[in-house]
Image 1 (tube, rainbow, N blue to C red):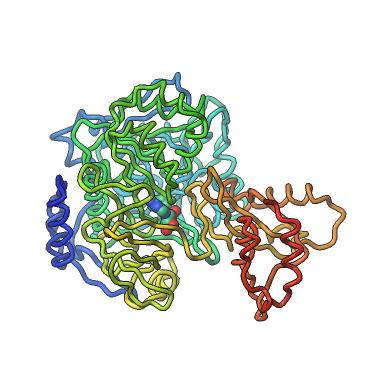
Image 2 (image 1 turned 90 degrees about the vertical axis):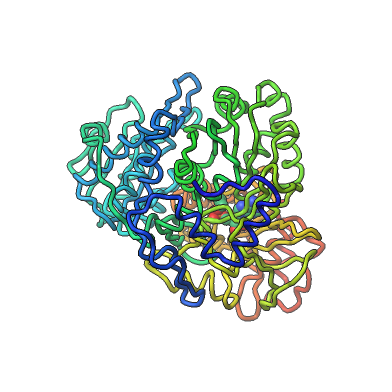
Length: 632
Ligand code: WT7
């Protein structure tokens, strides 16, 4: 097992060594895994191309490290503990031995359908154990998985399938979410109609008692997987072979496929899991994220399994059958580490203090937060009403691109301060710069957050478009990885991440490109132009505010805004639907024709008094009209 720091002295010593001798430090962590052949070089890198290689020449399979190597010591320990959407349905406990068998069966089934090392497989599934099994089955074969969150629309799914030229989709028939039964396979059918020419087979997991006919190239999971042998040799991979692609939104254009590779991702997710959560043998760990996001990849599936933990998976939603569901599950399974998003905390906080008070939450030792800045009120409520002041809060800052947790308090080891993600993990060399790229030294500063040295799970490329990777992360400031976030460092060196400084907004912990939402709105036939900005939202963190210019039409404003919401739903999915849509006569533009989003953000945030200088605009008169009709 990788190191687990136990004291402040150990953290300081590890951090110091990780900066002075990063190669020695990470090599020692890597040595604790099972490799078929050791690496030739620990690290080769430059941030200009960029080209980053960790453990180059090393041979491994991550699933042998997640599963096989635990069988002797913990074969009968529960690996995945699954809780259904329906509270009356029995939980499922899958041991490490059973999980290995199921992964092998699924891998054999994929093989029988022609999947080989390097092929891309898209997974579009609810939070059922089969999703984790399918992820690991791909990795067993060296196939590259790309999990698409099952809330995305058919169009968004098709875009991702085609960008990755995936050969296969694995899905479910239906998805149980609260009191809704969502047709998943129907979305696949619609995506296929839009055109996904690379898809050869579709594997369908049955998650309901409804009948459904499948066509020739479609196969039921129970007919195809359950009949296979329970052993399957693991494909031997190079440390730098691709493990997965995960699509994420940026400030421009379509979502990009962030690529992670086998060796470094393995080392870093295991290391950070053990240290951030201080997991001990016998603990029950629960992360409420969906495996469709990076949090689920790294801290439901890979990190915990690499560390031999018992990891929970929950199919449902925090509000079903009522606002006590999370706490009921914590009590039922005696959860020790609980990891969720600020948006969930705020929603549950709004439901009242009596709800958590009705459950026994005394097993909780560590409370995690991820995905967006946590406001002080939510932090305090989480601390006192869930942790009863006894479970340290770890506010973990990281990104899809970083693969694992980058900045976080270490529970019981470093101090905590509301809203502060605090200290960098060993190996993470943070730098603050101003807009010109000058490094801001010392403490009590505010600037743009960058990282100056590679860590093992840094993204390697964006799939099929390396130049975009270079442009987005490595070209803003020479020699630095730019996170896109603004942050401050307090007098004692703790870091607080304030939020995105680019045109990316964070809605309920989901990352969204404003340009992506604008492009979706533009698909509406009456729309001439749209501008989308984020504004502060009590529960979601940020809400989506769309300013839309439409051509003359007989349609009422209500009809138009409903239709626009439907279009966004169709193009991206419900998570991207604007909260507010204002029909406007024009958009404030600079003389060169650029939309002045700064002004639109101020109006959406109801800060009309501080619009700043608008006299240089091409059309200053439009600002007053927009302000008059603002939906605040
Ligand atoms: C962006 C990354 C990391 C998994 C989930 C989100 C924001 C994330 C925090 C935090 C303040 C945070 C940042 C970051 N963010 N965690 N603890 N405090 N902001 O992954 O979708 O790649 O989004 O989420 O703005 O850049 P993601």
